[in-house]
Image (cartoon, rainbow, N blue to C red; front, side, top):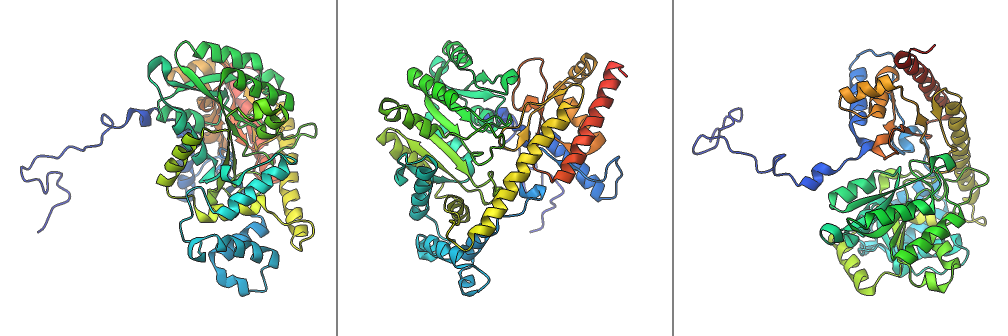
Length: 500
């Protein structure tokens, strides 16, 4: 049988063209509502420009610098040797015979493989994860929180933190109309949250961080947002990102206590996104886990507030995004609901085993008495030291530019500067049907090759404009990037303000 595939009616008995089942009209409307700025239109445009340059096209720049996403290795960060050694041994156990691999890495790899079916990383694990890795995570949390108990059976390995966040939100979203679940999220926020809320048709409840106070979380603002939301939905959950993404603030212990007291009083489920817990740069700041603070508030709080906290292999000093490793610790969840959580996790079988192995190395790194400690410690300190230097550099250079104001980058790996956009440019953006900071970021990309994300993709107060940029490029490249941003911004102001 010969079919002419160029003929759309080919193969139809009646010769009529068959209509597609899945069209924009029949597509799930919640999918249409999803937006994810970090990989949105700007990034697609950056990819097109990259291809154009590769094909010999000319622009006023020779490369696209992607400062849009927290992808450390893509920005040139080198892997932590010890982590890669353990994962390599787990993946290819024949390397156990090689003298090139340290014994510290070999015993860890053997232990992980003993917990895997058939002693192979190619097997499925139990849905919550490999048991010995869950135990290592519990031990790490206990040590991090200075003795606060952690039960390994409350630990669930995830495919990056995002997978855990989506799973918990699925459990929480229910009800119709005014009883529909409201999810309180910080503004600015990481767009995973707004995307998940849209996909699940939940109600987004915005609480605004205080930009004039270094993006601090204001308890009065939580009360305002909660009170207003109760008119049209049932707020059931509050999400916190600490250290902040995109805002880079590190929350004080007092602030965390206030949030937990608020959640206790209002009967809210707490989701604490702590993936940047190793990324604290400001000397006067310290990471406090929500769980530790909850414990210190006393048994009345610690035995009742429902809390899930998330961590990941993707950030910190390892930056291993591609392994898609992560975990969540679940506190005070109703036992029957916990059984439903396990059921939901079992549908996706298990997280990638290589990601689980990478997560194990992060929570069980070389100890001072081990031979590999010196190199590991040097590599870790080097990465975190460079990030601290780049956080300071970014803040200093951006704040020297007229019309740009950047809060201190206390933690995480982004700056979120506020940019002044002249009224004439705002009008032009409106005429083009786009947000003013989208126009700004598109012009920045087209004129300099720098790809950053408009603040409108993260949420911001009305008539304020921002962009998010990562501080991950090398010092040399970051200096070039910031210099180009400075020169572009001054040109942009002159063009739209007529200012000299």
